[in-house]
Length: 75
Image (tube, rainbow, N blue to C red; front, side, top):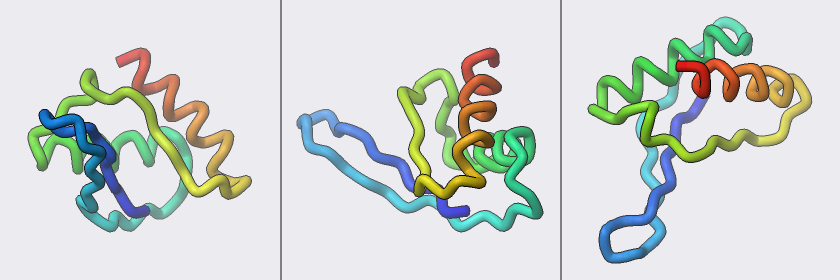
């Protein structure tokens, strides 16, 4: 799984940064949450600052990301 962040910088320009490629053994929402949280923590980024997420639209990821979004919201 590739972790890429898009954000608007202080000057109002859209930026995109590649952070890491992470190996995942499965695409369950809990596994994805743990891996994403670990990368965010390593880069001193906070879940509370997230405004959205995206994925490549693969059918096996759609339901996993819906549950993943709920896990992050409930945190």
